[in-house]
Image (cartoon, rainbow, N blue to C red; front, side):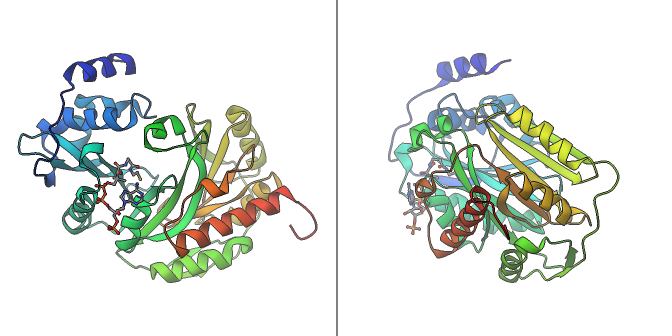
Length: 347
Ligand SMILES: CC(C)(COP(=O)(O)OP(=O)(O)OC[C@H]1O[C@@H](n2cnc3c(N)ncnc32)[C@H](O)[C@@H]1OP(=O)(O)O)[C@@H](O)C(=O)NCCC(=O)NCCS
């Protein structure tokens, strides 16, 4: 069933939810599936980039697997007025993303999101016993940055203008795509080793110190063999994600092909810092106009590093920050962007 048909069915099923009812928060039940899809429709209209969020059957199917865990806020009549979730997203199946946080407009500013967060962090996480968790907090307002920061998540990067603003138009998004802060928390603090590029060493070592995850730094090796990578293209935002499991001698060509597919869009490259040639791949990317995006602990199993390339300057002032930590990350990313814009000796 296509997006149009799914939306049509939601429009038919939609009923007004009386404001001011009591709300309780708890784990997803099969009868919540329609309410979850309706919440997406209510908040994002029909333009959320992932179609499956409008499909109650698919929501039900995913929640019956280990790929998706949802908590919902319900009225006594069982109407869903908010939700939050944990889901797999990265190449490492042990790394879950916390997200899907939303509350219907009529129930906002009453601490429903705070209760959903509590349920995820106090109950769901403990039950699942996850070693590490990450979150992408939007830059069009500071609520989710603030909630995540108060749970001890550390700011590790900033994905500039990557989410379609259409999906956020009802939520104060501008004409630009919305930017996302990367935030991580590590529960099992095992040490590890990374091939860290010199250019980003200082920032990454600062993040490792905040996360309490010691890393030894291994020397780089030249690019060799063939690149092993996969591509994901999100036409609504012009975002192309290139996940590089191993960079090889042909790396520059692989990147050029990804850029050709993205056209005027944004390209994000995720590098595996467990690969000895990762620092050389960073050199290739910096020469092609890429700038720092973030550090991604445990992304591949080994840590990952994000670099990004844009076709026009991001609207930095539109990226809202909830405090000095987020501000510092925005500054680091912006300074590296400025280096790209003004290439010269020492760049
Ligand atoms: C963001 C959202 C989930 C907040 O829900 P809520 O139930 O109103 O939030 P709460 O009442 O629990 O407030 C949580 C904290 O965020 C703050 N906050 C809430 N909305 C805010 C906003 N729009 N801008 C800045 N801060 C906000 C609150 O003041 C509160 O801070 P405090 O603990 O210091 O008092 C809700 O506005 C929403 O669904 N927005 C659209 C979807 C979205 O953007 N989700 C986040 C994606 S990462």
